[in-house]
Image (tube, rainbow, N blue to C red; front, top):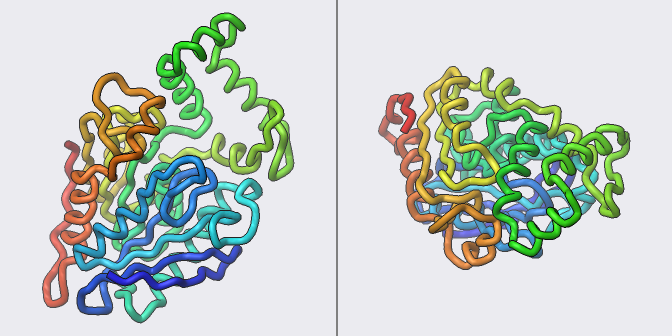
Length: 317
């Protein structure tokens, strides 16, 4: 495996890493998109090391597949301000990264898959819906729910999992977390700037407005390429039931996997699902079954030189 530093030139300059396998070149490739917020090319936040895209890149390289991952605007080696970028800006950045990846001589441009986690999955779907020439999509913890509805659902799921002192304080102050989230949405919807101060914090207001208005199902309707979708049964940030919605909405072949005990971090969590366990989870690697499922699916899609890719199939497991 070999990492090559590259730069994505598009609406914004993005620092990136092209990971090449120890295999014959040009190789098939996967473009990796991280989740929401200020995440670097490895899916790491300064306060939380998710490390999802780096571990995916390593697993893919072991399977003979190249990959590209990049720092978001204003993160790591990329200039700019992540708060000023909207959801559609992030799709444009992914499109620029795809152009770079398909232009590299080390990569077989006809065999490129888009893979995203959380928001990255939404971006990948949106780009494919634009007609981007890709061989398939890998959607990890993908939402098929309109953005504003999803944010309220998250509040309902998360509130019971908060630490006991926080739940006590909410009861003491007679605060309903879902109603508080809804009130903040109204305040954000009234803004017109890229960044706004809500409740004393500077928020990426344009991204939030665009995310709340976005319905991923509209993009899924326009995606005919094969899709692999993997979600954890204990995900508190996307609805596990959305796997069925995704399979019923996309017109192309869809293979779905609902992984027991898997959370949004793509790690397993024993006991009741809880955000408070994330810190402990992140000390462990990304779930091996998830990494293996992605690699195996890509190999079936790509085939090898002199072979034919497997015929796409629709499953819902």
